[in-house]
Image (cartoon, rainbow, N blue to C red):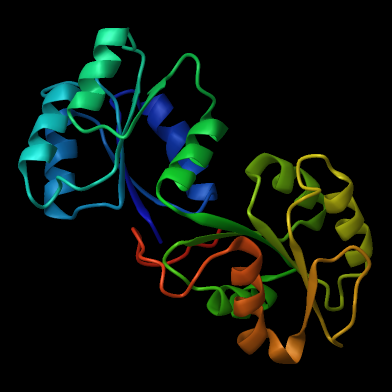
Length: 250
């Protein structure tokens, strides 16, 4: 899964962001001061860094300078998240190599997650299924370094999860015992937030489900699902990737 290094001295904020990015499919590593964060980045470079500026021991500006000076870390995408957001601070952070600057007081956490996904070329698939046994082959079929997969197994929460996470595609496991797959599909297509999101249904018998964008028979799950999802989200097998694997969260 993509590894995100969060360098943040406020433990409450660090916990909130760690939990959010974890639900979104990232492996989150935390550091609570600048020196610790720099050491973590240099010893095992992550895929993404989310960096505060006002840190103990070493400021975020100094961390940025050290990251840029080290060949192991100079190309890492760094996103700054800070209360210190005067125009001069923003310009300095960007001049030191930060890819984007977020103000803690004015940028929503969901917007930050979505922008980081977009900036890093990551796509998200929401998998709706009843149990781990159903999720496992789906996740194996979709394994790709630029693909984040989150799993919802409480299907009553499917609509809210789709609106909250705004995935690039939804895979709906419509095999029994899911008795309300059609209702779930109608909810997703009836919501303004997810109406245009491609929904791929997995069925025991290849058939068309009303308003589904594609259907894949359970017998062809391993061979057909990957191609159908990739086509819908415009992801190629050859795409260069910033991260080594996908992630699944219940």
